[in-house]
Image (cartoon, rainbow, N blue to C red):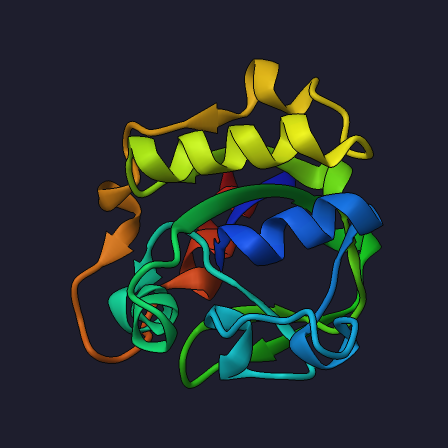
Length: 167
């Protein structure tokens, strides 16, 4: 039962709502009127997770909706034996239909310092989100290295899983 680190691109506003709720949900399970378009719009009933890089098209959805919104990339650590999976094999993206607890967030990378600062202010002003998330998880470095500069989502997720199993 190996744990896997998976990537989820989001806008910061949705991340803050997830942290308040304690779970990450699909777009269609998001509270009505509180969702801001981001990569969850690609498959409204599922949470799409990527194994090592995220297609640029998924990341750009935030800026297409509103260029003033900030992006972040979550690293989610999951034991894939314990959750319900749906694989989208043509895109080689792992999809999950059940909510993910926010305690599975291992790291948060921000597109830039302004994005991290907005997140930090929102956490401190929320009054309901533990500030402990600010101690170990947020980072500005390495964000761009997680993005695959292509127009089509294509990640070798299944091959990565096979390699992990052989280790």
